Length: 261
Image 1 (spheres, rainbow, N blue to C red):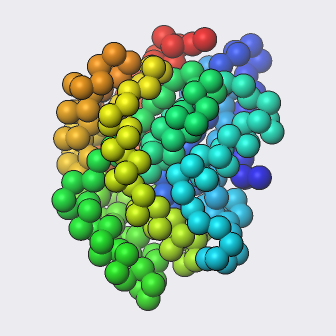
Image 2: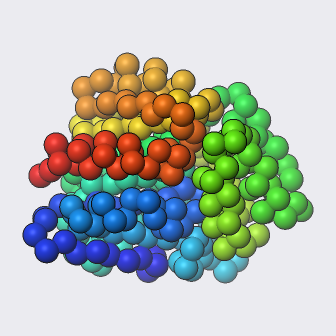
């Protein structure tokens, strides 16, 4: 069972589930917890092998896939008897909740995808190739730190970058290698997502400095405009929930109220 914590609202029937990115933990949502728990029931979780959630002990026992990771969350929702939830995700977490929505659409009220990854551009694909080449012998935190500086390069990204690097120290080399193995299925999975818009209210919220992933999301929302909306946040990078927490919170809480079921 994934490590998790819930905050139960005295009157709200709405659930909001937060899904962090690779190397993070539910602590990366610390700027969201106060306002969300005063409005909704919330579920914070650590993905497999992250934070205080147990991972797999050997490389041979199971292969990580997006479906496998999404099912971890589905099992947790079933255990907690949460029939339906809004989902707030960041970075790699956006792929996981999009996979979850594909597997169990009845469990999804709406999707909020921050720093969304829906296509790897040339630079990000070269990074994946590089990582696959050296992941076996380079200490994972060195590689993770390098990636963090590439994805969050500016001075105003320092707080977000430092938080994610510190949280990543809770991983281990084995878990990092297993999670990095997901890169092999990213393109086929994302290709399906780009072709098929889910009939669920979806908010993409992206920093205007998220140079690696924003251009694709702009094009995607033009194509998938029946249920999808894009909000671009000024002076923010990839981890927009930390770079511009006040605006992020105000926008996303309003979106959930608008799409309450």
